[in-house]
Length: 143
Ligand SMILES: [Zn+2]
Image 1 (tube, helix red, strand yellow):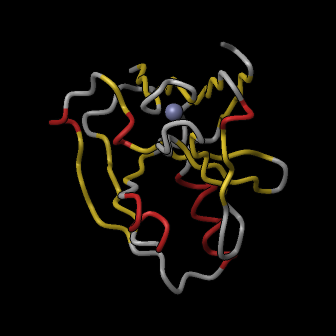
Image 2 (tube, rainbow, N blue to C red):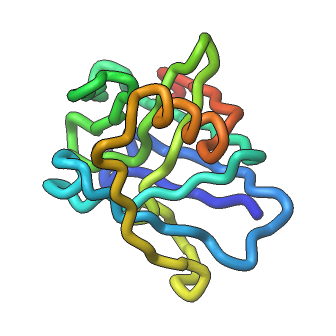
Image 3 (cartoon, rainbow, N blue to C red):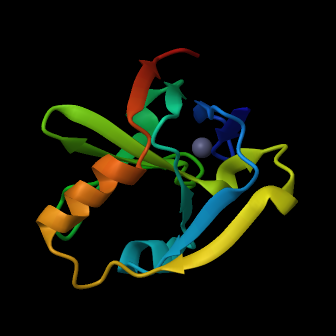
């Protein structure tokens, strides 16, 4: 299944190739302080391929906090956060914000809360390697 998403203004767009096609898409409302404030709900498929297309990289704010092991890609023009990435031992992993998916059948979403409070940094990175999208490409200045 090829999923498409973008921020509100379209500066950050992405395609996520999710094979085999999922019967349901996990949607995890993250309880960290940043996601609580912007309502971030994330999904990922470890075997997926994500291509992020940035029209104007100068209009993307890369925000990180806490352990600084993840970067949130915030559109500086419209304020939407379509994706977060984590660089783990030289490889980039990602999750996408289900609120930014376009033309998705909402019946596919399986919503759950996620609370990673108190998780060690080591456990956190190991979890991302297992669960996050393992193939991530950036296409910058594509507009
Ligand atoms: Zn935008």
